[in-house]
Length: 361
Image 1: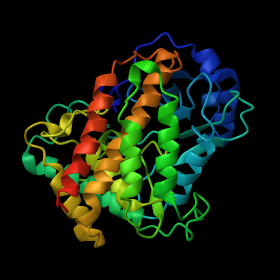
Image 2 (image 1 turned 180 degrees about the horizontal axis):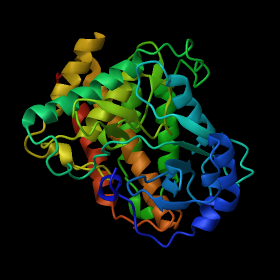
Image 3 (image 1 turned 135 degrees about the horizontal axis):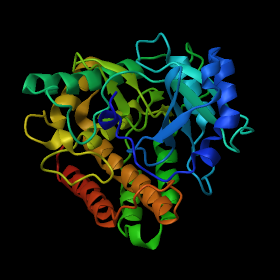
Image 4 (image 1 turned 30 degrees about the horizontal axis):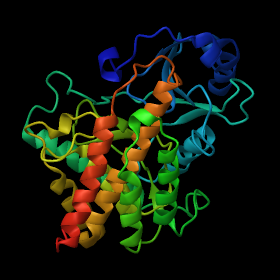
């Protein structure tokens, strides 16, 4: 990937304290069998608003290192060992993942766990397409289809068969999610509060559908968390950023992806690139229809799930904005997203209002 494609950030990061090359370098050299890794340089990849992702470089080439953000961490959040283990478990399943090189779970090296994985060559697409890439509407449709097909492949994995049956509790996922994200919202700074979010959580709780059988869910699945083949827009080479993965409701995972994809007639989703809402890209209905056709999912409850996705991401965005205000995002530029968060909550209410008026699709 070129620097423009990875979106590397110019920053004054103290790499020596964040990554400790003098300690981590020898660990990577031992894991790879290549002494060139005893010393490396690092660039922060812009775009990640939670865990910190670096391209690390040495005479041996390039790898990716992920570690938690600085500052006080929320309980159970930013579990690097778990994130690496998920990718290791999915190898050979048909779900495209990067190879894990080193999974350091003790925290002895950096004071926090971290992991290192291969750098998969391809395009990580955020705000714009690479020059000359996927210029036709057919190519853009192929990218949408590939994204959904990879999600279908993930939801088809038998978690017990790949050793991930303990990834989460199989029952009560939606109830736990409502409690968790409402609780996180209550910790948000005053500037990103959303007064209608608790009521949205209440309404969702009162109208909750029965979940299908539990499956491995990604929890943050969108285009810029994928590496796309530079020669084939219809092929995903790796899915990235497994921080929020768990055992859960696969339809909720789909709804989150559809929210991220965006709708030209819907609200602007904060923190998420808006490329796929531009002319030439298929609308969210294509994603929904392809997934339902491949999995046999009944679309009748999709409005509830889409409202739930709006609620969940509003709470996530509140947490990100709060960490920015606290200076815990390693020098990344702060964002004023309070109005967008509140618009997203209003959108969730509007979906439920429409559903209660007799809409089932």
